[in-house]
Length: 455
Image (tube, rainbow, N blue to C red; front, side, top):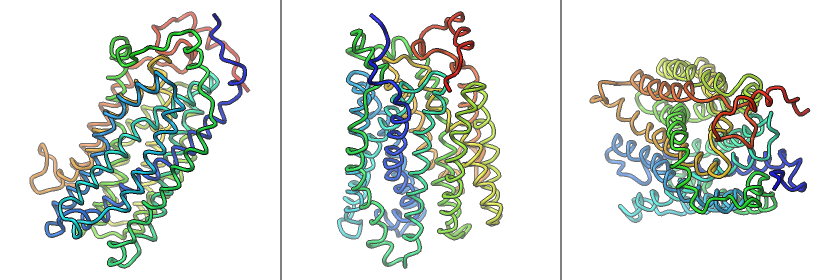
């Protein structure tokens, strides 16, 4: 039986990439507005404001709760996606994220219901985490399996490009909110960005319900080789790939430290920088990333995934040190310059190509679950890095580390683990799509190198 997909599926990589971009932008708008609210507002609304330091720590920890829920969602949604298809997960995750985020905007505060308020907040955050667990893995699988063999890096970067746009939108929405008088900000103002997410459920249903399933998955269905228990196959045949992705995904610490912890630190009483200005730093950095991501991904289609990823993994901890130093120096020009270079340029080298790098480590049968489980465990560690950083700057410190320099060193350690994981991985950018996740076959790979590129 031929492995060729039905003709109706051919020529759809752009459609898949656009669907991934729009869906990720909408989904991660919801996810990131929580980060801004956790850094600026929730410590005063949902937690005991009489102890500001503890309330801040609890608020930032609630941001990390979603990352703890993500591995659970990865196991569940990964199984469904590899068993029944990528499209179902892409629609489901958007609806779940939109509804849970809207409900956050409807929650009663601590002054209204006491200790029940943070419990309800954490519950909604868990639902956000479950949704995010399947979103990127399903979108990445969809674009990778639709993409031409020699442009997998470029097309899969659209998922992360959409994520960056979602972060820009979330931050942009919070600028006028943060500028409100505090009495309005803490009563109704902070709720507005969450209420706007009701559009996510409707948009997700409209955009993604018409998308075709991937040719690779349809071929598996036609051959009857779709595993009944994808997770069993994953951990029996691809456990090393899962472990490698977990370690590589620690690079996401750079993003969470930049977008949440650094924002909280910069606007704290200890530093006292303007909230709106710091939000503009994030917008500027993410705007540059919109251009940098596809460029880095295109480069990875020419020279390989590993060298491009390592540029980001090695350069990001250096840049985060310079960014935090600029914040500590209270120099807005330096903050903008180092912030744009950190998140917008250097980190984008790793961020733009991990969808193809990780996805190419697995076969079609377990690609969605392999990416979902590997990334979400790594992202869970990165999510709680925010709370760890908050502990580092306390007088007691953490493992001998203190202050913003300790946070920079902590970030560098996790980036080093990521770099080692990728440096020791197999290069896959020339491997034919049908052979991804299978034992290396040098002769076939060499043929792939000689194959003319698609225009």
